[in-house]
Length: 148
Image (cartoon, rainbow, N blue to C red; front, side, top):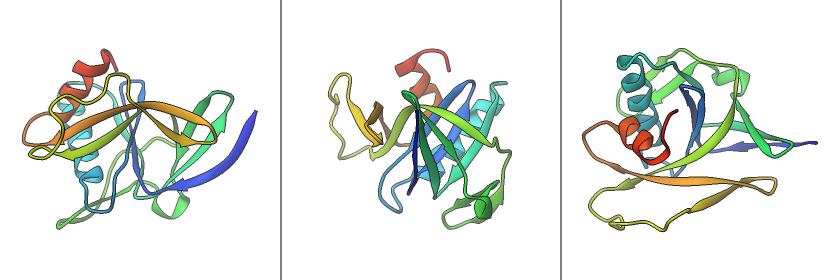
C-alpha cells in the first residue's frame, strides 16, 4: 500500500545501503552532521549520497518509508555560513534510522534504549541522538547500528 507524500523539514542521505533521516529544528546541525557523514563515508570507501536537504518528501510503501527530494532542490545542500553546494545524489532511498543532532554539553548522558520516532503515516523508525562535537559522526552511527 502506498500512502500520501509529506514534505518534512529534514535532511536525508544514504550511507552504504542505509537511509538516514536527520531531524531537528532550524539551525540544529542537520545539514552539517549529514555532510560530515557523507565526507567521512567517502574517505572510508563507503558509498554515500544525498537524498535531500532541508525538504524531504516522504511516502509510505508498505511498512517502509521512501525519501526523495523536491525537484527544485535536488543535488543541493546548504552549509550554514558557507553557502549552497552541489553534492552527489541518489533519487530515492528507504529510510532506516532517524538521526537527531544534539548539543553535546546539554544532552542526556545515556538516552533511552530502543528509542523510536514516528516519522510518517504510522511508521516509526529507530532514533539515534548524535552529539554535535568534533569527531566522526558516521563512526558513532555505525557503532550504534552495525554495518551500514
